[in-house]
Length: 159
Image: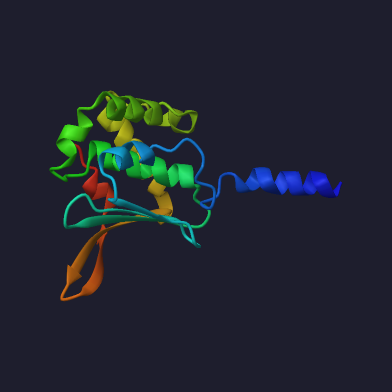
């Protein structure tokens, strides 16, 4: 009985932020932008992405799985982030294929839109609902770090 309980607790912990060994779309970005991504798994899970001299910071509530945060980060970065340095990366086969795989996950079936951009927007709003995930633009002013909140609904408007 004791082993069964321990086994169940292990399975339940697989979705938590502390377990980042699952299929990870973040690795696809990291391969093209080495040393640009920092993942923290203490308490709330977070991802910080700094492809140039600025950063975007993504923070999830404790009950959000690492996979959801990684999906959010990947989808936002692929479809909506305005970093100029991402243009070449978006044209790589691996980046496009990973975007398709993330959009096609069973968890996001209800978000199927007329095109990938609409599907991506729906997924981001679904995952971040109730501020489960927050996004920030990171500014360093006079050696002080400032997190400027990003309104996800506004940042994902399709133009």
